[in-house]
Length: 343
Image (cartoon, rainbow, N blue to C red; front, side):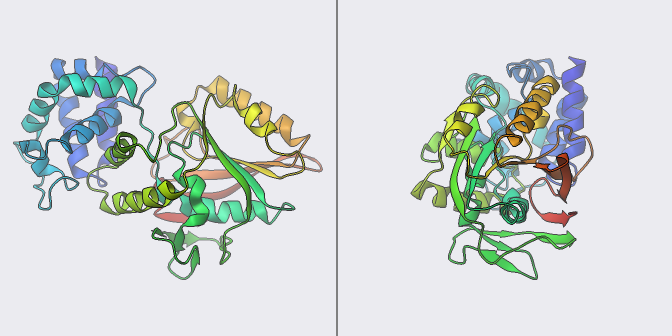
């Protein structure tokens, strides 16, 4: 299973410096090439991010077994976590094998649908930028929204250090550093005509199991992200976003047809396309550029390749008089910790 061990090794490199526990566990899985653990991990379909998915499944199950020795290493489960030591990986292995049936089921039916609420820190200025170039409120359509928490970007408060904007009375405060440029940060969010998400497997914020899965996808060391997620779930449950279960190619046309043709549309996807086959990405781009020729449609799109390190980008694609234009709006931390405005 060399490909799988390589995947765990790459994940460990990625997690290094961000979550010592996950880096340690992934590196040990790769180094030991334990056939029992790798066989369990192989229960995940081939199109899933297996290391992240396995760790999320363990995290989900461990929250229900806080007395297990492994829980002592998880900041999300205990108030006084131990640093990874010689006993950590054996406890992890024992937990996985003891709870293998439940973990295997999660690997088969769940996805790594991390709903990084802090990513709204780049969407706020990006959507404000688009709104400044159209007439009337925006119809926002998000591709791969998970539970749709970023569709509710206008219900959050944002602290960019030198400026605080957004919904002043929101229980959600998203702190993000402006590293460069001058992003448009209006005091109030842009007006919306409507909002909807299209996802193969949308998560329901009112369903406890789905909400717990979202929590399990947050790495144990990321306490700030977990707090923001919990606050955003509270907001979402009062008025959940509309989510359509469907394919981004097959079902997107019907969703767009629901929006009057004179209403400006902004299709949004952040960190989604890297999980989509290249041919499908090309077909999606072709379809959206065709739509731009017949209606006011803008596209805020993320990258199809995440091999560039700890920074990702957001582009703005739209029709201009001389053809389709693509502008690099921002580089940003994948979890929204900072934004570098490039436009």
